[in-house]
Length: 555
Image 1 (tube, one colour):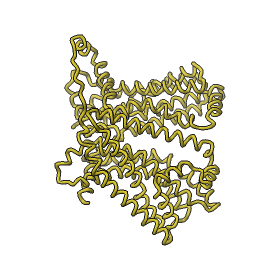
Image 2: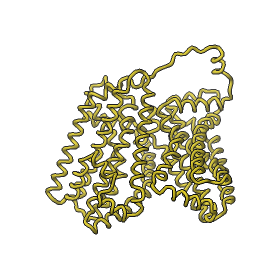
Image 3: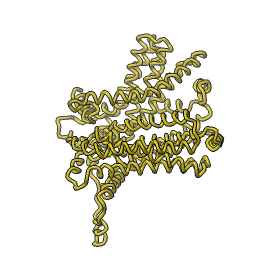
Image 4: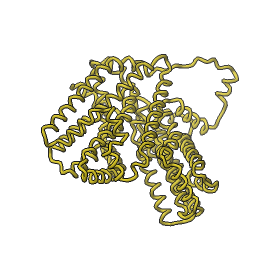
């Protein structure tokens, strides 16, 4: 057990500088974690208020215990979905198994350490989805010391069941699809399948529950009547979740202690199943996963001349960055495809509703009527910046090079050109997101050409602003010591800063336009001028300070 704990501790520290594996990085880690907490406060505050309202309504009819079952269900579902990503990242994309095999470690040591690392990340997920419910329920119900002790134990146990299920599904898939030498292709297929399942599940649930969850009273009726599709589905996937709810409800009785023991016993049994199956599925599926197939193709003289035709340094370097984004599975899934998927995912909550037609008609009338002035332009600008902030292409432009970044210092290319070339793919992909979203909105809402033109006018400088900020963040806090491409983009907290800035800039833009109350033309031209000025300032900082920051980057 000591070897498992020691190995898992080393793996978490090696995940990046976020956890302070470099001397003097403690204050940066504190600031990052503080920023995460501040960013989650609004979401958690809304969740706490909603939970408190549900509790008050259910308490009037003596059904407040149903709230605990719903909380366990939602937390288990979130952990199951994210568990697939964590298991792929920790178990397969880290590419450290081949280095561990020669060490004096048993197979179950490696499996246990990787499971604990994935479980550690799942606790962060549970903290957001499950923590507020446990605390709010305890405060509203007047729970004593035993309740909070039970809540802590259940909080530690709940992520185990869905994580084991995620691990078994992923290991089974990787064991029997990891054949031949086209491993990158199979990983891409697996990633696409996971995304499709997640999007489809969200659409089905949204469709079933739309029109029933518009207010707290309807939600209460839904829980009591047993019509909650989400609760019923997840309860079938995780039957033990009922034991957790019953243990919390009876924390002051012997029966509650019995439910807690039974819940812990089932968790231990699921871990035993994980070790048994993992020993037979994991190692055969992970061996040689870092290998890839190379195509043997004879290049004739004409094709060779096309490959070596002269280009400007800026275009050549930018094309190199673009090709790497498309050829690397981890970069393709997390950077490139997000620009295409985000506009599609944004439509699901709207189109999945049973009353989507009436909502679209009402929304179109409000946006085209002119009564609210230029606010729709500000909302569109904020949406474009949020999508640019969610795209991690620019904010990982330096990190994606890894140790190969230091080759840039030997290239006969000026540093400003290198930085601009690294910035080009992120801006281009963000513009793709903007155009896709505009095309969807123009088709569904019948937007006028003038409105679309104003949106593009304010969207382009807003997108450039976010991407400039992102590459400056990565220049100052690059994560070059990664062991896999997945670690560079998934276990990297730098994209959080662009998310926070885009949310803040978008919110301030909407509030500012609401206060000014200008027409569409005034708002469009004003926002265009504002972000052009900000872009110019950030650009000057990048080309003047950027070379200095590059020189300061060390291995």
